[in-house]
Image 1 (spheres, one colour):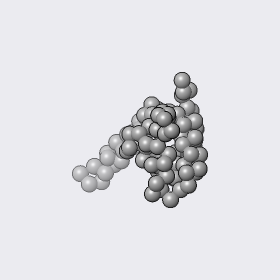
Image 2 (spheres, one colour):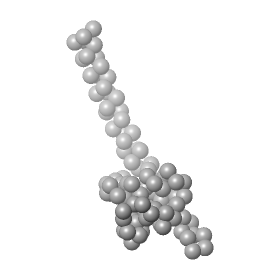
Image 3 (tube, one colour):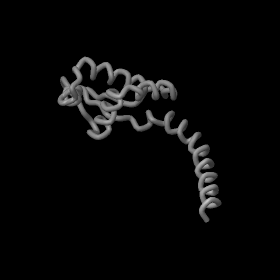
Image 4 (cartoon, rainbow, N blue to C red):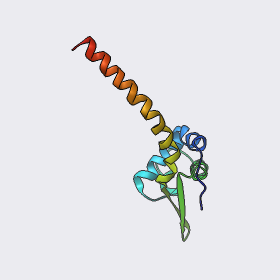
Length: 109
């Protein structure tokens, strides 16, 4: 069982551009091996493995071994701490945009 990651862990995992790109490739692929992730990435297999370790610790990816290959897939529920945090601030922005809309309507009716 993978423990639920904190918002800090998820943000730290996704703060690194290369790691974010690895995560995006996994999401787009559905399931992918380290070898496939390395191919065409310009990053060494060792570096990809380290990025995968961070993503796994953050609860963003899961792995499945099949023979000599390990397949990685995204865990959408791993993004829940980030989505919850953003949802909290979504109300703030909705209010601000409503205020801006009202101000713009006053200026140019």
